[in-house]
Length: 415
Image (cartoon, rainbow, N blue to C red):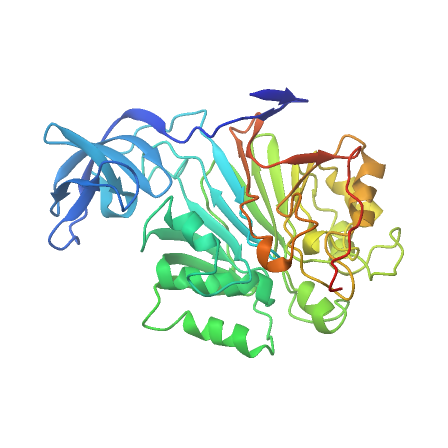
């Protein structure tokens, strides 16, 4: 591992977490039996098939799976099929929050795994799976987020919260895939009355008998409190306010309906900006507008260790007052090689503003070294993964750049 100013960069990912033994049983709703696998993946060999109410002991956990012992045997069972049979003991400490920024090309797709102590139902360290946006691809064979999740989980696994930040295709289309393949416990979107036919069809599909979405929260007034475990503070700082005043028009207005979420664990925090903007392309960086102005005027705590930069690093984000308020150590850019009126994102002028504020700023990008690639070739596994125990922040995956080696703005040939 490599240490950089309190941030640990790991060269490999440690996945399995061992715990004290906890008594569980197979849910009574299981019909016939549920397979126990040699490894936590559906393609692994079965070492047994357990019927409803069978007693087991949980010894380890990974996202979507629990390792169990049963009848002098052991293996992995899907988490959704077992429940604890005893009063949950006091939660353990030193558990890890993971945040995955998945390379889906030009779009956002974020998977959050909350800390897990292997003990369900104690209100803390519950090991929840949360997804923010799904990227631009809806088809099963083209959406990179689907194999990323299913290879670590299984078909029909529970996504505890799915958040679609706003009605643009590079954010909601991939969510169409997820509702076909997973059980969604809670769904959130800004409730904006969009005119896009595809987006409205997606929203209508949430109540279809062909999907499994348990709770739908559309609009700020319907979000309630995000209870993702008492060890976390998950707060929606902004969403479409119900009127369009001050949001601009057209695509700008749609961007400025974005859900903005801050997630804090101990002394580490993540700020997810969706596509919320702070200025026009030609506007002054010293005169915040739109959502950035609203957040600054509300005097909320915007400070964050890690910032998922708004609008893929467009010049329309990141005014100087906003950058000062957030003061991130790390800036994450989720972008591809799509052509936007002769330019690609991110705009280097935007990233440079973070360097002007703090020359020690670090950047992680899902388009790392993709400058020479066409859009279709740039979805190539540049995933970025962080984890934190609430004290130190570790980088599990992703290539770092800094203020001394920001690449030049390279236009695509067809632009």
